[in-house]
Image (cartoon, rainbow, N blue to C red):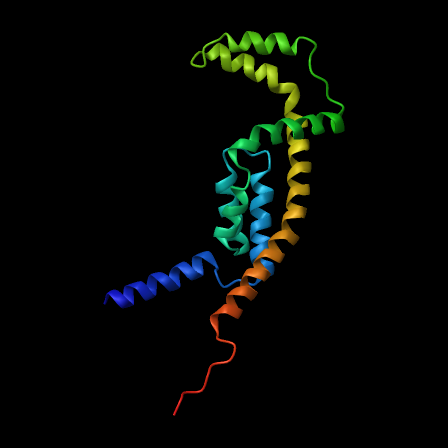
Length: 174
């Protein structure tokens, strides 16, 4: 009975995770995850990627690996850089008193409603540059991720298949 349950769970997981996808589909799932992971939709990356994987029937694990390639120690720098890029593209400018307002904001309590209202007013001019820059950034990174992921998956599958069968089995000694 336990063997039947394990077999059922294994088949169900293989279908759910698409572990037997072609290298191109696995690379596409990873690339989708990278695109979503570097997109401007902070906090929704995982939900968006999983939803798109179900819609397009892609490998969920590969997509999540792509989403989580936007690691915490680069996220602030990435979004700052892409927002500056977006500001250049959209010709947006910061208000002249931006720095003073930011310093003043840091003196307020996070728990007060005044902090959040002032933060919204302070960041409002950066919304369009943030969206434009993040979409440019995630498109460039995803375009680079696909050939890298395809090469990696193809190489790993070739190594795995090569190592799974002995090259020249020796005949039994009589």
